[in-house]
Length: 388
Image (cartoon, rainbow, N blue to C red; front, top):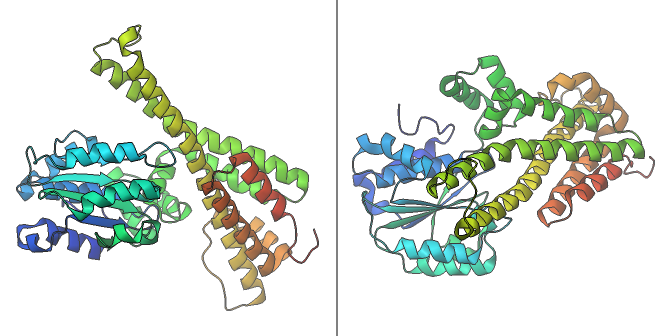
């Protein structure tokens, strides 16, 4: 299979990275790259593919090296990520030390910083120093939603590659070809995910995830009174908690089993006192990941609701303008969307979208998720003209 086959809808980005990774494009290879794009556009996957292409001494090695990169086992590859809300400055300092080692096996040592937008200013300034005086054979790849999420001094020392949102058709074809998913189910998942590759795969392969999304939409559509609003907030918090637990439980179990094996312990064995510190550190990381996963789960719920009120707005516009209209994301709920659109009208639907954006901003600033949802739904039952 072509090395870049799973990167969908990013023709220009793939062409630029392929040339930079090839011997002919060595003169165009920057020491630091910034891959930006909307959630679900494939930033992390593209970074891994690019890393494998940079490390490989020959194109025939790319497949094997990519498997090692993806598993985080290649000696010339490192991934800086975090389970917390921000990337800690000490973590960046540790990776910078490794950046000065020569490659052990490949052409380059590659360090990927996932969610580089999670670096606070102090952390960014530590990274900036190594970008100003880069090691000769180390390549940095930073991933973030947009260039504006990083300091201008960081952006100025990287070569930018911008990704676009892949089309639903491209995502559906990928799921069908790569994962063997029925084409109709793949198309539905791509539509409901709003063209988010990872979420589309999850919706197509997990009936539980699909059901949780349906619960979110149904709960929002049932809100007409303040009591409904509080019930919806409580229900959606439980949906997000279940979603986060489903994502983290399996990973936590696998990590603990791997840690026990690396420490030479049998499954279920008592942990010797001298090793408890290492296991405690793992448990603390997992707790931080659980907190982040819950917030990410709430954000996914808000994204789903945004698609609902987008549908309501477009339908409301269609009611007053026969030439307007667009395909609904949540077409399974068409009748209830039409009913809500007729009752609300375009202005109130637009106010609902504004309320959702405000909720996402509050969530990003650390407001308690339950309070974010309660404030959101309480606001949705109020007509912007002043009548409930």
